[in-house]
Amino acid sequence: MKTYTIGDLPGDGIGPEVQAEGLKVLDAVSKIHDFKYELVPYPHSGEHYLKTGELITDAIIDQWRGLDAVLLGAIGHPEVETGLVERSVILGLRFGLDLYINLRPIKLYSEHLCPLKGKGPEHIDFTVIRENTEGIYSQIGGHLKKNTPDEVAIVNGIYTWKGCERASRYAFEVADQRAALRGDGKPPTVTLVDKANAIRPHDIWTRAFAEVAKDFPDTKTDHAYVDACCMWMVKNPEWFDVIVTTNLFGDIITDLGAMIQGGMGIAASGNIHPGKTSMFEPIHGSAPKYAGKNVACPLGSVSAVSMMLDFLGETEAAARVEKAVGALLTSGKVPSADARSGISTSDMGDMVLEMLEK
Image (cartoon, rainbow, N blue to C red; front, side, top):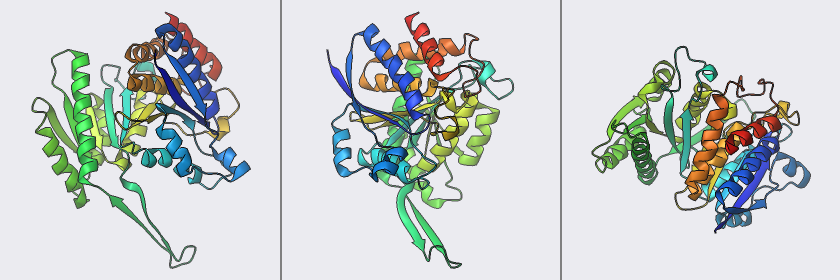
């Protein structure tokens, strides 16, 4: 029996509260499916920075490389410079471990959670593959004459053939896997989302995508500019199967995806380097106004645990957790997947455990 080593990084705000529920579910499902794990705690957060002045170091990144996975709660503290700790922790993980895939399932479990008129679970079930280490987030740029009338700010977006090719290939592989699981005979479809009409360097995405597509002759391909993609996600989300896109566009459209699937409280993501240490998290922020009130929805964290288990090869346990979340959301017991549900964070976690046993 393998023992998985998992970095436990609860972070700030509601992070520790939702992480506790995710870990509660992990503990329960490990006993049902007979696997072991060891948590390796990491205190890094905005609060930790205020106390110690410490940010992520190369030594910490080396430690992360020796783990099987990292589970993150949320990062961000209102008394710390905006983005300082987030960049240190989240980009430290993404860039330090080369987590070049951001995997975002967008799945509606119950129609009452969806803000779109006339759309149900049969319409919203697709996956976004966001390139996770390049683009505008490459952190290349800076300020000249900052805080003066002549200030100039420059940021460079970087796109490499390697980055575009490997993200596209992962998207085609995910589309094949989804088609096999559906078993309905419908061909897998991958949609490239860019803005190559206005941002001509995005042509590298177009060409890399087309080259990868040659290796998947049975997969349908499609293309949408990002503004049109946002429109179709609202009007006809059923058109999408798998989307592959840039770092910035992926960041934006997956928040839109979270809302049409039921809200930020339910959405989870994987930051993945296939075959190597990867990180899993709910996509919501630290939401400091809800911190300590036991009202935040922990289902995003629970779903992140499911994604982590699938990545680790514990596929039956992962499926059991996902089914428990789905069963809870379709049970009629959860009016909304957010802080206004009237269900406490800890009670929501207990409700998942009840479904897990069933």
